Length: 262
Image (cartoon, rainbow, N blue to C red; front, side, top):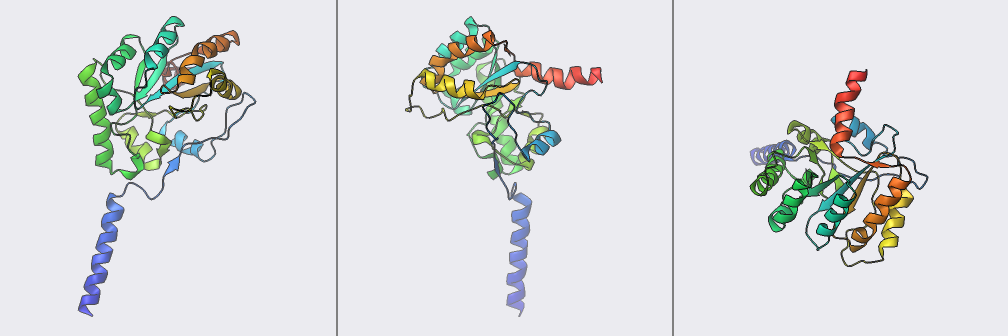
């Protein structure tokens, strides 16, 4: 009987340890109900989480603004050309990069900063945030910040995008505690397979079919199709009356200007 009680006590203690140190029992993969009628896609239950933790996936002002963002995990040779197009058309962007990218492509990181673009934290190791402890989560993000500071004069990043869009309420809260704002997206397509080249028209059509006012657009710089279609996309959006803005413009208006109006 004593042995049985000892085993039960050990199991209970182990369960308490797991509960105490496991980040969460649930994980969500970012997604939305895709539309092709130029309306903002719905995100269901995720909206309550973004409202609670101050995250974004689009600009809800109704204005014809667009926000270009790129995810960079590794370099495939197209980023310089993308930066050229952004510079020629005076379009701001945010590059969510990993620690690997900072270490392997410091010259491109430096150019992004010198060209006036924003850098976002996409983690140091491209980890699943929901599989980390709070201390592991913090360390991963701070490792990225240190890597970025080692190659630029960037103070620290403000925006975070979880690798593969995996998150939960706990990681949203942890990010808030560290001063980060989650930036998801309302427009994207499967464009991260480097060897899947379908021609720039395919990428162009997939983006234009989902276009809507206030879109936060996610593209990957490893795509040759994205690089080839970008100038066509920018010019046609401008012709349709859209304006490209920085994520800083979105957050400043939402968190600074709007309260003053109220």
